[in-house]
Image: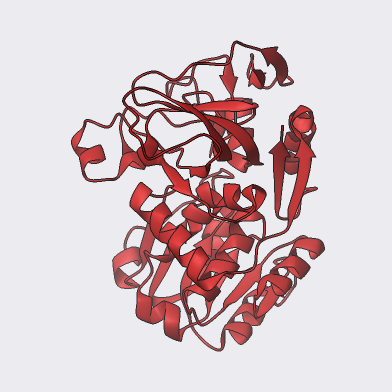
Length: 352
């Protein structure tokens, strides 16, 4: 089995040859067909998140151990199953992997919120992920049939799709139907949010994005407008494109600047959901949250039931896929570099 691993935080990924694991118990071994390259992979590879003011959140302090095979957006083909995996799976079947796996025993996991488990086993973060030609999944319940969907398209729904789907579902459904919303960022998350908002019968999105190529991609994905935040009349342009008041904002970037802009744009009673993890910090006058009746919701990926609901929505409504660039597995390091340097539009998918 060939894997590309982090051996030291910030160092180049290392090509590693390991014995292909044999599934035990309820485990399922998949041949990796597609593995998405996500901004979370950059944070994991570097080993930290920026908390602002010179502070960092260490991935090692969160329990991440090296060596680690990155990759949590995985679609693959069943190769073998353990003796307790049941009879529902057979070699050759293609499945999307739910990677946000918890301990399976705590009350959080029993509430089907494994992504919030205090002792997670996330693939590509705490366990070996998809930057490999094979991946081991602990139980068949984490596998979702993708039918005839191309695996390179399906893979990105496990993180970018699930993340924005869960975030959009946290906004008042009446607001989604009746009000255009603001989406900050037109990377993989932002473009996915635009397409899924359409599938959810949303009123439309105004995208804020500094990169001209990504603004064009947002318009192609269905955004009603795409605005450069550096424009001198930025706020007025956003409100004009929205058609008045900003009732909902989704931040797919998560920098100090984008968070502050979202809070500044919202009308009284507005809702703000942040999924981006770029980093930084803001000062927040505490009386303003109740006085403006604002809702500020941090949303982290999504649950297994949400991923199943998302894939059912995708099959039923067939939203347009975001732009995808496929690259060979051995280009994993270069793909991370391109994503970090802002050279990617849509999603890069690794294929062994």
